[in-house]
Image (cartoon, rainbow, N blue to C red; front, side, top):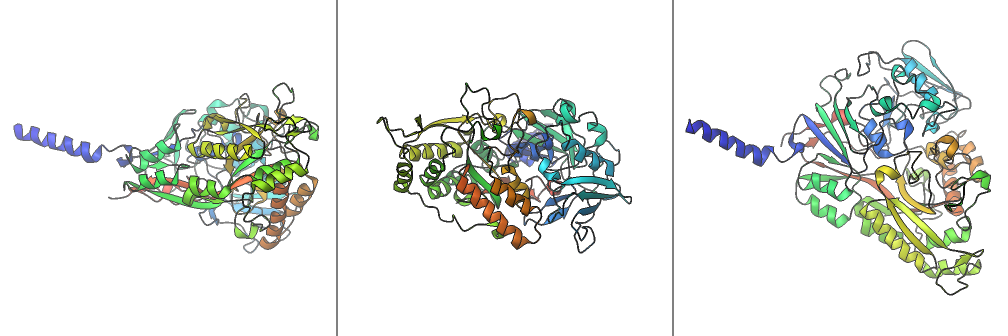
Length: 568
């Protein structure tokens, strides 16, 4: 009896020492930390990365973007091209062959009608879809038999890989979302919080702004996948605690967006429990300069109104030029981002064919910044240390999400702007609120009730068209579209719009790249945004987690069905 008790005690001790390190050691479960908690699981109703990534475990597109930017079939059998006949020679149609036998997690078959419905859902005139750009110029979708989807564009489409390519544009189940069209999109909480999908997992429980738990989809098409029975997708906290949970304590398997001090991150990695992974694509940490009046007593606060509601001084080119010139991007990149960032003066930083050399190497020049303002007559007339433009003091509120690196960036920029006579009030907001997209909240990045705000986003794939569409006239967030427009700074320039139209009709990587460079230069020159850092995706996973192949061109969860627990 005593011998048996001794065995039990030994097993208990061993379990405590080696099996009880945390959930990261459980072969049936994987724990993912996104310190920006998911607020919805429908990517068509949120522009936030955390919501798109959380939904990508469930919902799938026809194809994804791999780490090298290549298009990889997902629900499609292959990628259509002109050469294989999938794209018409006049570039007005693309035909996808969807894999046979794919089932939704409820056991019903995926059909071409589901794709057609999703297009109609996102482009409904009374809806509030956050990503209609993926269906730009689509005039028809047809089931042509043989499980084939034919998409017709109203104009020649040199790059037709918008609809249903990347985790930002997945297919929804028509049967589930049929009653959620137009004005009813946001009201369908059950559907938006627990979508039925074809992906490797399905929702078990969702607590918005907290945690999503998933279980394996029993009808997933790949035998033996996914490699885990259960996923816990935990939100909240901050980047540093997420990194520590993976790299030091092993309490979690994967930590996303580790925007923390390079020295701190390196010290954590040295503990030997996991590894930091880095991938560059086109993400840019930037400042947006609100082109509209944001005064709290203005009934049209932050609404573009055709340019008749302009900001009192942020629309003055010299002000934006001086603000940009006062910033030391090299210090921000090296001290706050390390290997995860490079100083950037362009809004488009990849692939190389798209990168303008007009503003490369924009060094800080405080004397030059002051000279620009002096020459424009924007001076401190009353001696209080703050310049005035047209009688209005240059006082700005500068907001971003709560994050140690972002708050450090804010503090540096506030100091540098004070050296050119601009007073700055700093504000930070919970990431789940700031990126949440709640049209009733005054604190979302889309509503932009502030003068300046900062965040990162990039291109969904290596072609810049769906990225640059953000800054065309009429794409601004406003009450009529539920504040879901993508043109956050409310930029409008006729030359830019003309070039964008040309881009949509231009064939060839080099020719398209030349247009992208020119459009990049217009955005920088107009001063509606100030690029700061070309950011890599920086995440981490425990050493026992295998199969991770991070893509910065798509969701980091794009291949989660391939993740597995490695033998250690």
